[in-house]
Structures are given as C-alpha cells and as structure tokens.
Image (tube, rainbow, N blue to C red; front, side, top):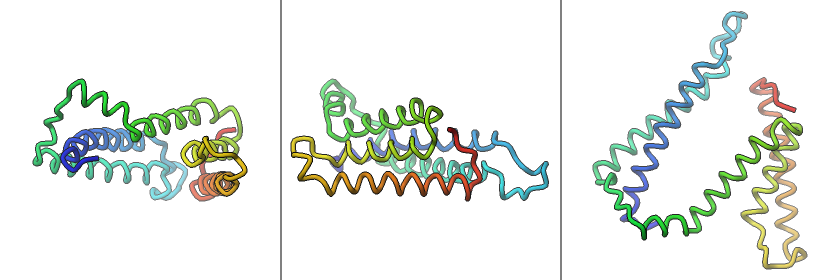
Length: 172
C-alpha cells in the first residue's frame, strides 16, 4: 500500500477496531460470572476478552485521532479506486480468509469434534495460502508435510488450552 493511502486505511481500520473492541467488551460483560459459586472474580470467563476488547477499542481511538489529524477521513472514493480495491491481491486474500473462517464457524464447528474441525481449518488455510497450484504435488511435499504437522499440532494445542487452561466446554 502506498504511504499516501495509509492515513485513509488507518481511518477505516480505526472505525472497525473501535466497533469490534466495544462489541467484545459488551459481550464479555454479558458472560456468566462464577462469583455466586464462590469462585474468584479473576476466574470469570469474560475477564480476558473484556480487557482485550477495551485495549482494542482504545488503540482504535488512538488510530482514529492520528488518522484524522492526517486527514484520513478524505477517502477519495470513486469508481477507479473501488475497482482497484476489489481487484487487489490483498483484498482477495482477505475475502478468502473471511470465507474460510465463516465455513469453519458455521459448517464445521458443532458438526464434528472441535479438535478435528480446527485441524481441518488450519490445514485448508495453510494449503490455500502456501500451496502453489501450478507446480506438481511431488515438488511440494515440504509444504504438505508442514501443513499437516501444523494442523495436528495447532489443533491439539488450541484444544488443550481451551479445555484445560480456560476450562471451556468445547462443542462436538
């Protein structure tokens, strides 16, 4: 991205960060508290997401102010700039990431065990972004091996952290 476009990108990003941070903060405040069961208030499941949401929103406010000072609110939208945005490689990668994440959250989670769904998500994600479809599969055995290893290890670690460290009942 060109340096001249950074203040506009920062302006738009700041709005998303502020909205996301506030939403995370509100949803974490609505999570159940185990204080009635005699648990420590520091064991509430919404504590870390709420803290992170507040930090994200605060960083979004700082970015908003910084981009506004640099006149990032002048987006300069026209047909050409919108076409360039939607035809860029970065935008395509963003939409692929969103699509994979939605399929993971809506299709996989709840239909198969959490660890298998997470492993499939990681495997597909790595293959989509690292596999070179124009080259023969034999030449890419390292990429395939890395994707499988990362999927197995990543799914195991994420599942263990959520199950045993955060004490989350995982779906499936």
